[in-house]
Image (tube, rainbow, N blue to C red; front, side):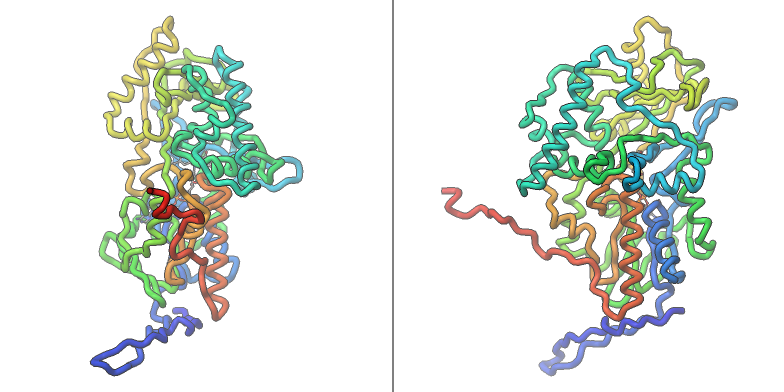
Length: 501
Ligand SMILES: Cc1cc2nc3c(=O)[nH]c(=O)nc-3n(C[C@H](O)[C@H](O)[C@H](O)COP(=O)(O)OP(=O)(O)OC[C@H]3O[C@@H](n4cnc5c(N)ncnc54)[C@H](O)[C@@H]3O)c2cc1C
């Protein structure tokens, strides 16, 4: 058992008993705690945090994971009828942005190369079946103008607005189903929420830092994993290089997190508990928003405000397998309905280089449409999907699919959504608070705490590393202050009484 060197945590406050000043009971110096660090969650952030601690010579940690595998929202499944079965991805599917020339490389791309992940370039713009290419290209240009304009707005120090007002200010006002489907593909399909629900500034930098090599990003390339070991195999193979069996507790669901100035203790659903000098919470923002975990004491208001101020999007891939292919020969096609978001983006896997002969295609819905279909039966969703396909191919006889599946990310208590999205009401200080340490012992890190790369695998990767570096620093030095927070976020231009006269 480890002996904590941080006597700085001994409480110096005093309280009064019957009018006599007495020293507060000294918080006992740790050394009784089970571990130096508990890493809560075994997704990308949790595994990268573990690796970072290990490299810093700190091995007295434990990952606590509810499932029986590492990878989190990198989650695969076996799809298809016997003889035509494939490992496909329910969660993350792409390496977004790889590397341009000698610029920065996406760390997920680096891991994929290291562990020989099989991938295929996915051509978002160059392999699309639609008969309104000009409208589509206009939407591509509108999105480029939007993100460049957002970048300029950031540099000029202007306040945020919604992405919708950004689009409107630039003159992009989609009205027809074709215009709407084209804009949806550029925006909602990536951010998993609508332009109305999203920050103009944050969606701009999120795009620039991942895809725009001229703005410090990786590259415009998107690699789709086709690896039959599953995308998560890169995280699992990486973990196998340093993690021992005893350092992970699988099938263990965290219920309560108690924290104080000198320890964190975590209770699991089986009634057992573990304690540590520090804990790093990597659970999805959705889990924190849904009160799936109870904190004792309750989290401070500044932290709760940040947790509820950021948004969680949902991204749902609906997989179908047919006896044979009857659809488009490109990688993508769009369906333009009068209702924005109605089964809009179709993607074929029955293609050379992907899973030729598989009979598999999938359609993606996002945001409120994901929420809507999660409340329907599989059968009802299948019927809606088939109705759309039949209207896309009125001359084809479309049979019942041999296999049909979609995940319910929003209802899943381990995720409560797919990935975070930044609303225009979320400010820089809110982000500081989302990331900040509570009572120096309780740390938060994962895709949602990443300023530059929220929503992405590489965001989770860097946040896991960053938080572990900070915790290692706390362990190694006598002073630990943690990441700072803003106690109260106030307006620089507050409303005053005379405004309302
Ligand atoms: C449908 C979908 C598509 C996506 N597509 C892409 C993509 O193509 N490219 C990309 O870069 N990113 C994509 N993402 C985002 C990416 O998957 C995430 O950003 C990243 O995986 C988050 O990692 P994390 O470690 O922060 O969180 P998680 O992966 O959520 O890790 C947290 C872990 O905590 C566990 N956990 C939760 N609650 C408890 C509990 N109470 N007790 C114990 N354990 C618990 C979970 O099981 C999980 O393993 C996608 C996500 C989804 C869902």
